[in-house]
Length: 286
Image 1 (spheres, rainbow, N blue to C red):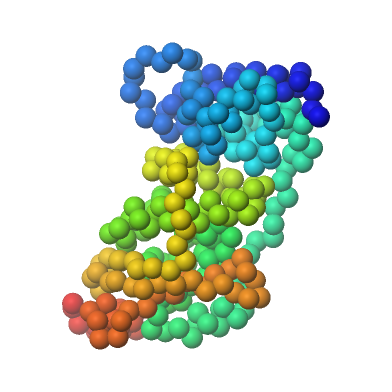
Image 2 (image 1 turned 90 degrees about the vertical axis):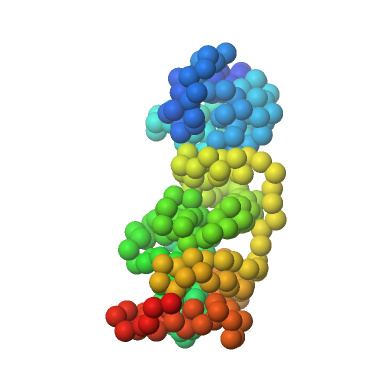
């Protein structure tokens, strides 16, 4: 059992680092009203780190330690430098200071062939943390030109919360975004010490107030299929039935496809969009 002295020092360390930050520093609204404490409040740090206020309170009181994933998140929230990070892990009694990173995922060859063969159906391949591993031509035309997004930034959740153009694609953005948070939560449960996921959650918590609220709030169920409305500047509004199929060869990869009822306006819009891709100058206006 780690010594009480170290846990007490851990608590004091966290208090000191919390006190030196302002709401504006971490992307929280600053109303200018007087604050009872210097720096951030405990509940603000807890919300940004994706843990309960009670859990964080016990950390500062020296009554408990924390997992590697929580410590990694606190490094980001409290803006610790490398030396401070090492000190935090030392006080917490965590030997593994740098969580092991997994090799970068690449779209499975079988899924790549499926994507290439789906010419009339928009499709994506999502990996761990909702990284966008692959897409077909119609999927890119409907959502965004993924090729122009730097590879390290190709993440569905990141685009949904930080890219205004990607957000505009979804008239029901809130529903789509909350489901996205639920998927990330499932990944966090399955891989609690994933440093890339921790970094992503920290980044989105800093960037978007809705993400912070939903990550720290009540969990909503993650959807594996459903209906999505999309708004395209050329093809107009399209309603798709979407489903996700797990790759048997690599269960960490999912093929996400969207289809429309034959004969429907959305089906005609997809056909028009496919024609527009083939000849942007010759497709008729809708």
